[in-house]
Amino acid sequence: MNLKTLIAGLLASVTMVGAANAASLAIVSGDTGTGLQFLQSELDLFKAESGHDVTIVPMPSSTSDQFGQYRLWLAAGNADIDVYQTDVIWAPQLADQLVDLTEAAKDVVGVHFPSVIESQTVNGKLVAVPGFTDAPALFYRKDLLEKHGKEVPKTWVELHQTAKAIMDAERAEGNKDMWGYVFQANAYEGLTCNALEWVNAYGGGQIIEADGTISINNEQAVAALEEAASWIGTIAPEGVLAYGEEEARGVWQLGNSVFMRNWPYAYALSNSADAPVKGKFDVAPLPAGEGPGAKASGTLGGWNFAVSKYSKEVDAATELALFLASEGSQKRRAISQNNLPTVQTLYKDADVLAAAPFMAAWEEIFKNAVPRPSAPTQASYNEASSLFWSAVHNTLSGNGSAAENLEVLEIDLTDLLAK
Image 1 (cartoon, rainbow, N blue to C red):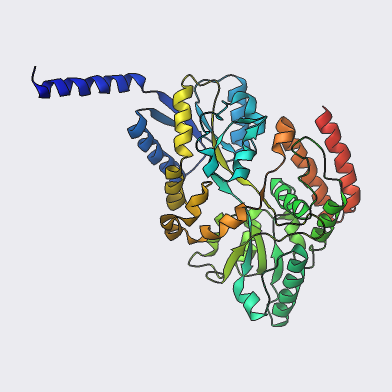
Image 2 (cartoon, rainbow, N blue to C red; image 1 turned 90 degrees about the vertical axis):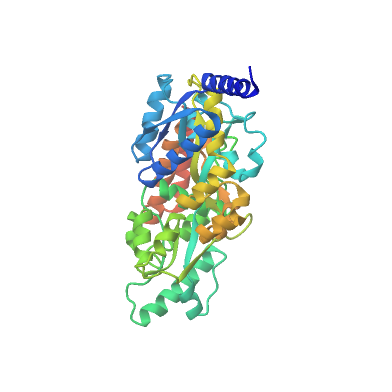
């Protein structure tokens, strides 16, 4: 047997071993359009690297519908799905049916934002690894601040004052549609995010603390909600009580608000060629509160990758989750999709910043990220959040004072978590 034949035989043996070890996996995705195309391109890279073949199982784009389907599959012990894409708040609700990735990810968790890793850790177990993240920012009209000699507000009280001064001045000049501040105040999960930011910024805690303590009924939280309620009809239109992200963006992007609270997706849209605010705005961390424990605070969002404990290919599925959470995959996602990475060094990466310059501003914003209390509430999170946003919406609407509504909320949360 000559050397060439021997080498060919060895290569064939390696190929056969690789094929024998290859797994067929399935991952669910609610992405649409280019999001699915990007995921497929990553799966192609993963196959070339590992030999594992991965099929995408499409999901509805509605996160509520996705979560409902996940729970059905996992409750049934479905072994057909190996890797789930999970919202940042779902980990505690699904934790019992997900693989503990603590050991597998021990060498890479340190590169991610600590708050993201914390959000996916339940009872000491890392049940999902980060894919990309989200945190809100204060969008501000830099042209209007410069025109009226104002600085970017550092506290919510300063925002109120600055927004009112510029709004009044602009209206006096004939811009009758100008408002000072728009945000998400409809009675839904978006209001939980906004109100958690106000309360936490005032040193009022996280609604329900990591140890399960219900902390929301306190003086700092009352002060935060009283301040927010004072915006309605003054610097924010009364219609903001029905605003979600898109309604707020609509007012802002048309040039009719000095400030806006929103997620990163609104940045690129606000800089689109036909946007009246194109080139006229910038972003900053959300303001701090007042009094003891005051700080800047922004609610943590984002998506992660979890491995089903019912998977027949747990090792290969874990490889896939770690691949999609890796620095390389996150960099490609940031450049292609403009999704915000959880790998901290990518916020200084030249290629990422060339493709999405706005990301440079978000590194500081993520340092102020606070998780919603999904870990201590676990399966009861949706109900707890609904109780919270309802109490806040009542306060903003003038249906009871902040103190009265938080007192009732404390009782309702106590009853809920005692079940």
